[in-house]
Figure 1 (cartoon, helix red, strand yellow):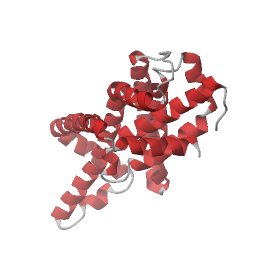
Figure 2 (cartoon, one colour):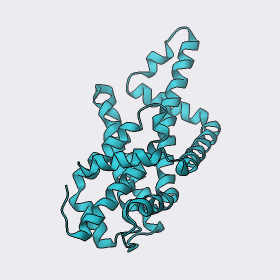
Figure 3 (tube, rainbow, N blue to C red):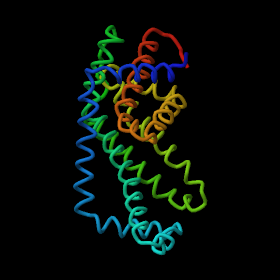
Figure 4 (tube, helix red, strand yellow):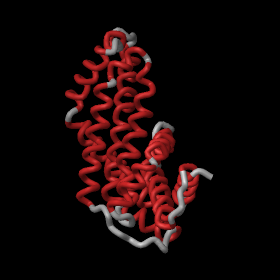
Length: 241
């Protein structure tokens, strides 16, 4: 069985364990509250920017001409929701990778990899730098590819962006406590395609209503399983694709 598939199966199994129920809930609550406050304070500014973007891709004029007006209001509200849900998920991902990963790593390592020695090749500063870098590139990808939505190709952008965000955020943190710096580099360099594949597969969950609320923790668990499994094999001198 591929370690990518095995990591996802193990993550799903861990996800339904009662012990991580609160770990699943609190990052979502914090992210939702944060963007609710931001949306409330900057609603007018956000709406203006949204109309400018919609105008650039040819939807703004259509939206303004919709009759009756209550339909236009509903459509506008749905667009706000469509935009805010990804923002909440991204924020939850960042909270998860910086604050929740240590607890998840402890749960997974103690249960499945108790023999792995902790080399502490990473740290909180590295996690923060990695999260800032991943978020910055993620936002840049969305901005640069915005014109693609006008020709329909933009439908692939969310999946590519999610794949990048997931693998960039979690590959480092999944290994930071147990692997040394050299081991982190070896595993990341030799498993680029697998990490992108795992990022893409876990990214699909982010676009399934209701399940997307569990996506950040599911993604974290999958990358922890993948990373620690590869670290175990690396130290044993075993090659596994």
